[in-house]
Length: 422
Image 1 (cartoon, rainbow, N blue to C red):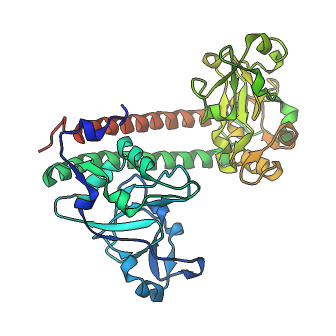
Image 2: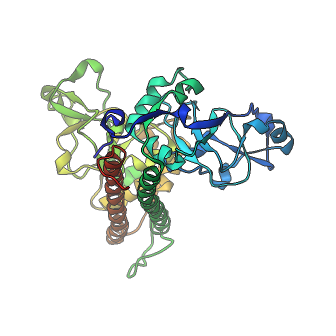
Image 3: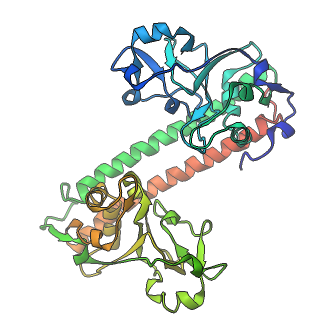
């Protein structure tokens, strides 16, 4: 289910402007880089305001200003009596603009520029507003009223004129409590998945380097370069004039994500005449391992690798992708795949690739990458262990996606009044 309905039209609740609910509003302090200190009074950053309903700032992301600065800007301070909203974003798409969260800390914080704090009257529940701010309907309104190009913002006046459906306070609290329970379940799953990913990375570090050996194996490992144990090929640069409305799909790096290929959307085509003619050498085959090699940041590299499965075919390689075929005599496919998603491969590519913000590398860089390999049988066993962990992660991520869909369905029912809790 998707929260794509028009809440203002679908809801049975009367609409009220935010101005009618807000009793006080405070803006951010004019903090300069020199005003930040290593300790003192905490600063509310834009990055701490997301979709989870509460201000969340990791310890390593905490910022401070001096007590002298804070005392000079008391009108820019908030505590847990205030609700927070972002009305300025450095990202043109404004992904966090308009999001509303609560504070847990009773201590005073200084608002950074672009962050606002406001108090609500007795007829409005801040957690209910936070849930409304996560709907696609509300997000569309924020995008409609924000102005600017590189730095987008919403004026106080425009924000306060937004009208949202408002049931009685008791029902607001019941709705927010029900949705918050699902949020807690989602947060728990996210933490569990993050922990499982960390465990997988630790297992990869141990198993792919021979630091931990599987039972029954004791032979020496061999240090080789990738070009000694597998064949790889960069996709051709298909020109815009060669794109067709239908035919054979072209694989770009954007179509690769966490072991899967998304070839149903944002896809381009090349004619069958060209695909099976001059580009036949670049047609992928089942069992190939494909990797995005351009337009990604180093931290995302291990998310941009996938096996090619029969259901994905046919498709032709395109620019910004590389495909690998392991030598069956000395390299197990799953062992190679696990190496390509490892931190070791990411580190080595990062040292030789060009580009600063985004990577750009090709076969000449890949052939310099070193890999340690045991005998083929041990490679197969290691690949099976790590693949099993991947399957567990995939099952957990599927459960997370279904839980998020469940919440969207609940929002559709509760925020429109189709299902009543009071």
